[in-house]
Image (cartoon, rainbow, N blue to C red; front, top):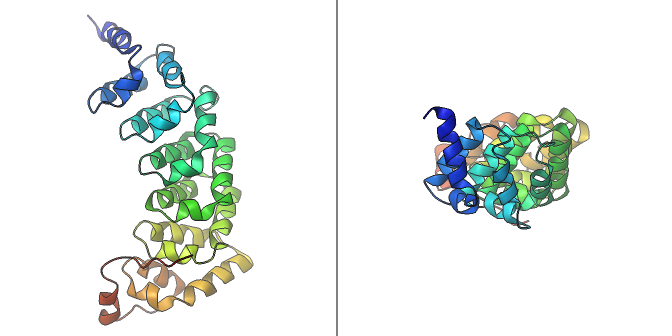
Length: 242
C-alpha cells in the first residue's frame, strides 16, 4: 500500500478517538502528523470531535499533549476555516496566556491568526495586563505579540503594561519577564516612555544588581552593580507586591 492508503487507514483508525489520542504521549504525535500532511477535508473529523462538547477545545489547549494538537490545527487552517475553534480560544485568551501549556496555543494564535484575531487577543490582554504579564507563561505571550502584531497593537499593549503600578519592574526582575519588559520599553513613546523610565530608574539599584534586571538597567544607561550587590540578587528575581 502507498502513502495515501496508509494515511487513509490511520484516519479511519483515529475517527471517534481524537480526545483519547490527543492526550496520549505517543498517539498525539500521529495525530499531529496527520494534521500536517493529510488532506484538509480528511482532517475535518478532528475538528468535529474536538468541538463536540462545549469547552472541550479549551481543555485540550490546557493539556500537555492536547495543546500540540490545537497548535497544529491553527498552523494548518486559517481562522476563517476554523471559526468555532478560534472563537472558543479567544474568549478565554487571558486565562490561556497564563497557563503553562495554554500559552503556547495563544502564541500560535498570534503567529498564525489574522490581523483581527491578533488585535482581539492584544485587546483582551491589554484590558487585564497584570493577570497575564506577571507570569512566565504570560511574558512569553507578550513577546509573541511584539513579534507578530501590528505597530498600533504593540503600542496599545505596551501602554497598558506600563500603566500598571510596578508591573513593568516586576517583569524586569524575572527570568522571562525581563525580555518582555525590554520589548515593551522599546514600543513606548512620548510621556508614557518617560514615566516608565522614571519608575524604573527609581529602582535602578535593584535592576543593576539583578542578573535578570541587568539588561533593563543597561537599556536605561544605569552603571552595572558591583559584585557585592550582584551577589545579593544571585538567587533569582525580586517580585514586589502590587
